[in-house]
Length: 493
Ligand SMILES: C[N+](C)(C)CCCC[C@H](N)C(=O)O
Ligand SMILES: O=C(O)CCC(=O)C(=O)O
Image (cartoon, rainbow, N blue to C red; front, top):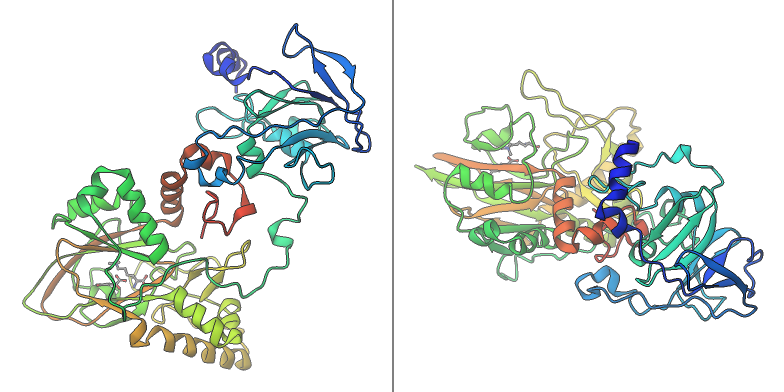
């Protein structure tokens, strides 16, 4: 950021509003806590200026305490867990530590690496106030930059003066979301390799409960209805939308209430019939067994929406959904060895129908993809039409995989696991293509279907912002600590 931009920032209300009014209860001076012992050396604040503290060492300082203000905590479930905690910020062995129990020296504490904390300063000189991108050059900072003073603002934030002269203020929410509990990062934690899929709810077609559904008018007019729609997809794997005007334009704008439509070699928004416009069996009237789409993409589309516009002079074309997570969970219970085989054995996939296309993922991918951090299955890739012949595959591995895949297929094709519906014009179906398999019965006559794909990242971005609000999402950027917590805006699958 140019000097002039910085100067104008400083001059604007933004800068003055950023520099918090510091009324420190205590100020901790670096060096006075060589061994983190009890002799905390707080300096009482002088009356003259909030920053100018007089040096008065207290032998037995009452720890810095305070309860983060309950700022709309209820609206922010992630924060709710922390509003009652008294906390204590101090320097210990040259690092900033935050203890969530101010009274107990031995209480667990959060320790923050100094360079980590410095390069993640949230001030407008370090994070672009509009783009939220880091603008401080991490590598221009002194590698051994140190906090020299840690003090508390009267809005329960922590203000730090750094050895490079910079000053930073961190909100409780940000510190809490980025607390390094001195635990190894998730990657190095021993996590069960056959962790089951993330939490989800299974629609049981045997019970005949109402389908998850929302109303078009609501979705088009209220973000709360979009949140309900996306939450249904996240929880149940699919959702119907009633009352959709029977035309492609309305269907397209419906999808765009989530995000822009994913463009592929099939185009963007599709309006298709059985005419082999593209060389794929979807563009025929044939039976399509349960499958996920885009197994040949490195990044398969996350959502897929179908809206039947018309079906004349014939019948059939029923729509099939099968819950790939539910089947995986059953397989893991029935035969953990088969489950592990489907998570470990990676395969090539392809889309090669059109003359000018031969799409394959950048690496072989397994049927049940385990998330590298949570070790939970987060994506199902199942498409027997598009799986390519794997090589360098010992016959013993082949036998193992085919047995496991057959067991999974038996679960996927069990009629009690199949959700069959006959789509009608005016009702759109959207589903999670990383979890739900879909298919179609053969049909006769002229059948016109439209729809589109949405990327994973765009779907999850929309859902997390609607669910948690932008500030909570910004406070939790990178917060992998609560991976499996539905209250953690960062949790992704
Ligand atoms: C574009 N539209 C959805 C109509 C057809 C896409 C074909 C999808 C392909 N069979 C696959 O499994 O990825
Ligand atoms: O035509 C349908 O109902 C579904 C087609 C399909 O499965 C697909 O496009 O992947």
